Image (cartoon, rainbow, N blue to C red; front, side):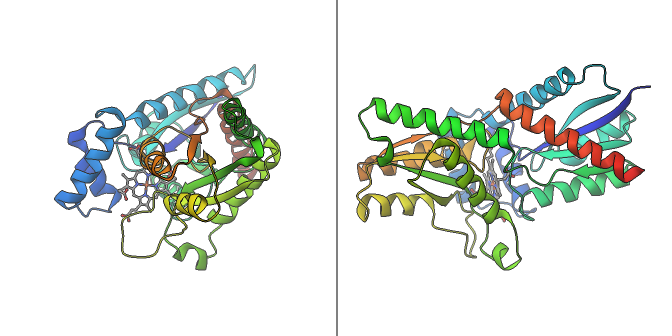
Amino acid sequence: MTAKIGVLVMSYGTPESLEGVEAYYTHIRRGNPPTADQLKELKDRYEAIVGGVFPLRENTDRQVEALQEALDNERGGGEVEFVCYQGLKHASPFIEDGVEAMARDGITEAVGVVLAPHYSVMSVGGYLKRAKEKAEACGIRFIGVESYHLHPVLVEALGKRVADKLDAFEETGAGREDVRVLFSAHSLPERILSMGDPYRDQLLATSQAVADVAGVKNWQFTWQSAGRTSEPWLGPDILDTLRELADDQQVKYVLSAPIGFVSDHLEVLYDLDIEAQALAGELDLRLMRIDSLNSDPAYMAVLSDVVRQAACELKVKQQ
Ligand code: FEC
């Protein structure tokens, strides 16, 4: 008999329409509604990227479909069938909805994987905690993938993206080694460091590995998209880094490589492509960005690999 294992594919989530932005923002703020000004500011950012369409939803849908295809194709005559479900952190279908859907389909064993390669207790840890709690309540044995930030196929795919954009710089007359590669990821409150959280070290490890694959020596890491709260967030922020590069280091060419994200969404399409790009223009910097992974077959191969490994661990634990 074929064994079915559920795969809960988790992503940040995005509203379905501009009307849904308030509920979404309130969920991110753990039930505290935003002020009118905060809400307007966020709606303006969404409108600026794509005129009110929310690309993360379509990208996540495609990633879930593509992972299902990859798992089906690799199955061969194997006895285990993986069935993917979607669960979003801040929008419908929520993580809990995905687990409930599995339970309704009679799934009793499941693997959870987040569409974010680096672990922090405040990011991936939060997804996995909710998924595990719901799975336990539904009688599903659950194992979560914590991180896959040094998976060789992921590093290779990101390295290729960096190399491709360095080629593009060269075509415009810039020397390859004159381009400062800026790896970046979503900032988090500084207090994660005193908690011994691995997030920063994992991001630095990915940056180093990708730079090695792409043969890049001229690189640094910077944070982006810090939250608007009163506590200190990890820095420097990419906007300050760009100012420093232009004013103090006379850098002229910058390649943005947001390795903490896997999709085109607000934090890439607005924070980098609009906000950082506008600043780069003012500073007379030429700024390019690597393409996002989205549903690149290489990224799907990474996900299917880590899902299979986790499923094996689930089986071993059962014995
Ligand atoms: O395209 C979209 O609609 C969604 C884009 C989006 C992604 C994303 C990823 C991460 N976040 C992380 C942490 C935080 C923390 C807070 C926070 C706040 C926001 C707000 C928006 C938002 N995030 Fe996000 N994040 C995205 C969007 N994020 C919108 C609210 C307005 C603002 O601050 O800009 C602060 C919460 C609080 O108020 O306490 C913390 C982390 C990631 C990367 C990992 C992941 O994808 O889960 C970490 C995409």
